[in-house]
Amino acid sequence: MQKRTGGPIEWLIPLAFVGVMSWLIWHMPAFMLDWVPYTSDSLRGQVEAIYKKADITPNLGGIFGGHIDVIDMTALILSPILAVIGARNVKAAGIEYEGASSIDRAALFIGRVTMMMIAVMTIVMLYEVFMRYIVEKPTEWANEMTLWFASFVFLTSGFYAMQQRSHIRIFLLYDAVPRWLQKVFDTISTLLIVMFAFFLVYGSFKQVFVNKLYKWELYGSAFNPPIPATLQPMVLIVITLVAIQAVLNLIADWNKEPVIHTDEPDEEEIEMLRKAVGQD
Image (spheres, rainbow, N blue to C red):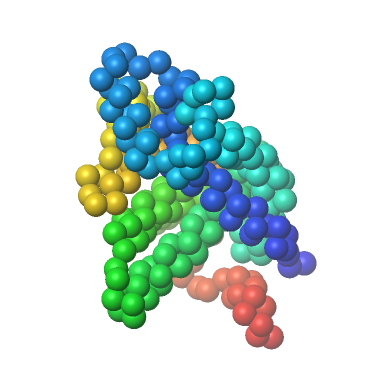
């Protein structure tokens, strides 16, 4: 029986999540200034100057006299709520691997969020084309906004690809050995992923979270988004999720029958694609 997606809510929730997280990331300095102690007044003043220049709602005033306003706090509260609702309501499509664990559902939800980010990127690029070639008033922010979103898409799609087992694998030797040796190969590859993630996080934690995020390093352009301050921590977060997902994949696939990989097309998948595009 063909699986069906969860309807509009499966796409509206990820879209709302993209909006909420975009607001939180743009206003992250407000939370840092109110909740993170700074080691020097000059550094705090530097971050505060950046925030005042980028604040979208400067007239709202902070809660309890701080920098966090009511919209910031609302976005912070909504972000986990939307994530939980989205993960609980996401439905695996016919050609997707669903999985049974909570992180599997989180990966499926992140996959939907990634798709929404691609849609947002497309809209931004179309807007820039219209402004540049029709109105002849190009924007200063569209190109870098697209670059920023594309970087997040690249990272989050890696987590989704690991959960879907759709990353590139070479099966020439793998398919030629017995199942017990395949399990050895799977264990070794998972250990290598976990080791890589551990040493990457361990070796770059201070550089990323102290020198980039803590100082809220900007891109240095006319639009000047905080690309270094946000993307480098995201790399460490995603590689950690990928490592956890790799371990869960190993456990989930341990007792499964070996899959024979051939160059022949998957007839069942082709049939599902035909139904998806409305062809019988």
